[in-house]
Length: 107
Image (cartoon, rainbow, N blue to C red):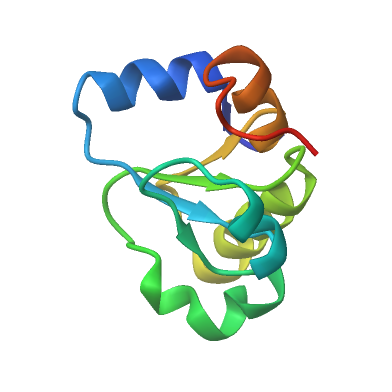
């Protein structure tokens, strides 16, 4: 089972000022439509080539629409690159919009 984090838990950690790198693995069109403030876009298909942009130390939370693509990215980074500092946003940005920040568009 891949490690995950609920939107409420992520919100609490961000509000507490934790230094968390937010990596959004959706496509540019989705990212342009809505995003969590402070997140960086690295589409899933670019993860192998751009993995160096994802920090190896310090918490990283991976985000997508419903949590499936971000789970794939997490699995790749864990199993191929040995990363242990990753969490998947459970339910993705859709759950974030519904549970934490209704100003983030739902699609």
